[in-house]
Length: 177
Ligand SMILES: [Fe+2]
Image 1 (cartoon, rainbow, N blue to C red):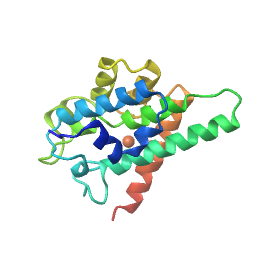
Image 2 (cartoon, rainbow, N blue to C red; image 1 turned 90 degrees about the vertical axis):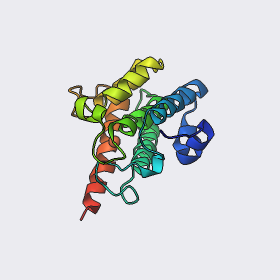
Image 3 (cartoon, helix red, strand yellow; image 1 turned 120 degrees about the vertical axis):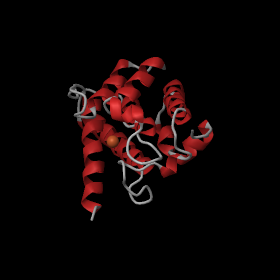
Image 4 (spheres, rainbow, N blue to C red; image 1 turned 135 degrees about the vertical axis):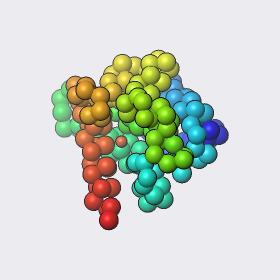
């Protein structure tokens, strides 16, 4: 289990502070803390981006930071360029939550946890979001970011997070030797 306070989480991922709505920021952090409590890892820094990867080179935290920062910046640009504004907060919170399931899906023993072996990627995050009363538009972002769940992104915010996830993941794979 990962013991971490909300303040430590905000220091670890300052992208949380980009969520303007305080209730949404708190709920998003509460979901992270619940996943941390259910994890078999000791520290978020030890979790790799994918099973078997070196967490120092390809860390889960760095991936989430990248996807969240990219999604935030693209959502801001979208609102500068398009006539109909979208929710920058939803894109930011959705990006922070899109892979929160990995905290439980991956095992510190290597590979995937029993949960990760038996339940598709993304479902744990969706279930935590539903439990904590996250708006459906954000649950949709989490549910549609992965091809493992057969739900394509149907909102600009979900398309942004899904594409920013692909950018961050694709660039990591370029670094693999
Ligand atoms: Fe991701």
